[in-house]
Image (cartoon, rainbow, N blue to C red; front, side, top):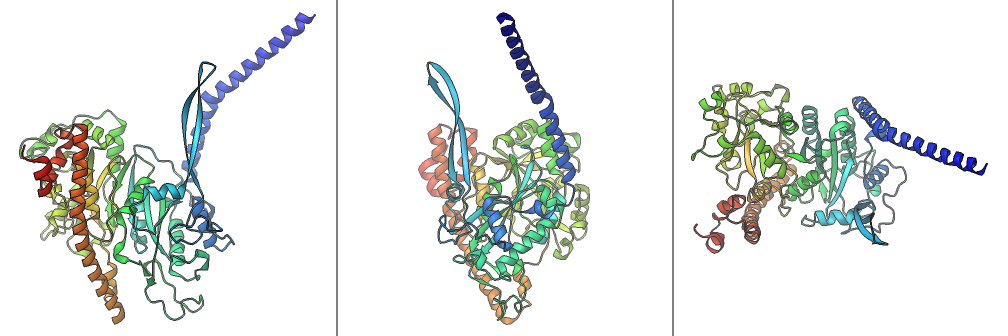
Length: 561
């Protein structure tokens, strides 16, 4: 009798085990994948519906508190200000923790075991280290808005930066690209005043209101655009009139009315780095916001990574136009698409998308009239007189290394990637690259040399530039802030002259900083290559060539070979 009872108990346990195993296997191999697929399909469906207000609220904790404060819900941002940094008032810091986890092996009773250990760092501490070279005080709020769609690692995220008077052209970029975008938006804020203390018509509040209105203006923002804020102090605005602090009497100042504190000290490279750091794909396009995406270079990159790449042969048509040939018969003629995209993945190649602009600026205002394929672009470049020319043709060092004559000579549909063979240190093309490449140096402030510094360090690290022969960008013409102010009253004209003078001084200062930066970067990379034993290998060829142009370094470190 007792044996029968134990036998039944054992049978019951076996049945329970089998049932549990079946349920577990069914969940892991059937139900879970099916539910994920159904969920992704549902997200695709609902993402095409205009987002509700609750869906466009800020994503990060610091942003949510600022959002609540912005809408006067009684939140005192982050409260007591215990995380106040560099004089920032409460509400501009974050209490969020960034957590790192990894497996740790241990031994107990001679049996190896593994367990997960975690370590947490305040988000503020982590970001202060990430942007330690920035001009402070500066506060980065990542993912103020976060897009709903997942981003494939092999996709290309446009990384860009905008100031408050570029919202309209940014919306055009979002509508044309319809892919992942990571953007840093600069919002000037008072340094020692909590956000809750600002008047309802204060330019900073109105700027944030304009940002919320922009994000809600199209479902494409909620689908594709991650927005990060760069907060920095400012001291003045365009004169708002005597009733500024009174909501009833003060005029409404829009986003474009905010004047940065150190207007010429806009930290473009800091903002570029922030947009890139928080991009959710492994590949990015470094782009200025006022360029129209005219061709689908994104599809080229995604297709190249999704298939077994084919050799990039010299097609007969391409040979007729001199494709893939260089002064010494080297370069892209021996390259294959597979090899180039493998280098793109590892961070030693970048794809250049040539930039153009309308000769008459008034013709470059409406993006709907822009060419959308190379054939249409060629017609405009070959018109008499030409309607479109290479971007900033008057400043040859900036883009001429792209070799526009060669690009224009390649027929539409050639699908050639040719290597940039005459790089020089002022070259600043718009490139698709891996996130693995070196970061932009953040010592630059204002206009001049900042983007060239990004490309220069990429080049020293071993990155080669390859030009896409069938793809291009077109500059969106717009009235710069200075031009618009020329028609204002005489006091504003004085401000304009002061600003232009300040910009000229800043550009001159940046040229000096750039010269020092190049020397420092050369020393850093040459030492690294020497230490690694790779100084005389192809990896260091770019550094040897460029650094030889700096007399002090050429004499002391490289010499004649």
